[in-house]
Image 1: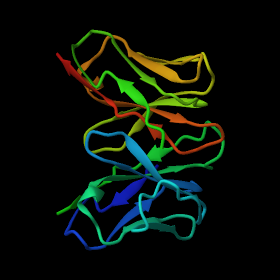
Image 2: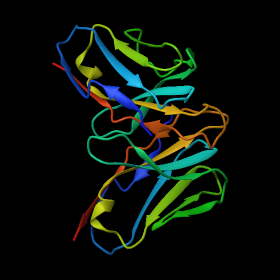
Image 3: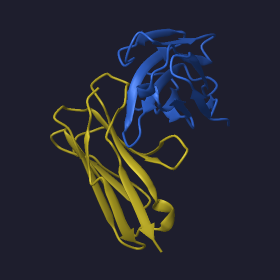
Length: 116
Length: 111
C-alpha cells in the first residue's frame, strides 16, 4: 500500500517568508508526527497529532512554527518568517494508533527546506 | 528532547566484516529502536526492543536492550555493500510516543 508522502520534496525560500509543508499519512493511521533533521544530526521531535488534535506540541522550537491536521488525515506544518536556522529536512511519520509501545512509526521521504 | 549518545560516528569497513555500534543515555528508556536511513529518504525501522535484556535478531542484524535500560547495541554480521547508510538509535520513554534519536552512525562498506 501507499506509504507516507510529503510535499514538496525540496523548498528554497528567502529569509522572512512563510512556508507550508504537507504530509499525507498512511490511510487509516490516526497518529501523525513531525520531526526535523538538521545536517549531521538525528531527528528531533516537533509535534504529535492524535486524530485532529495535537496533545503534544512541546517540540515546536518557537511560536513561528504551527501545524494543523484536518479530517484526521492530511497535516500541514507552517513556518512563519523563516530564519536560516530553520533550514533542515522535515519528516512526517504516521502510526496506527499512537498508543502502545509496539505502535510503529512509518516515515515519509522528508521535505528539504533551505532558507537563504 | 533527550539526545542519545551514539558511537562510533562513522565506520569504514570491508565487505564481509562484522560491525558493532552502540547508543547510551543518561535517562531510562522503555523502548529502544534501530533505524537505517538511506540518502534522500526517511528512516526505516530495523529492530524494536521492548524489554530490558532483550536480544532480538533480524537476518544479519542483532540488537540488545541493555539491562540498565540506558543503552543498546546493534551488530551487523557479514556486511554487504547494501548495508551502506546511516544507522540511528532511538528511544521512547515510559508511556511516550516521541522518538528521541541519536546522531547516527555512518557506515561505508567497500566491496
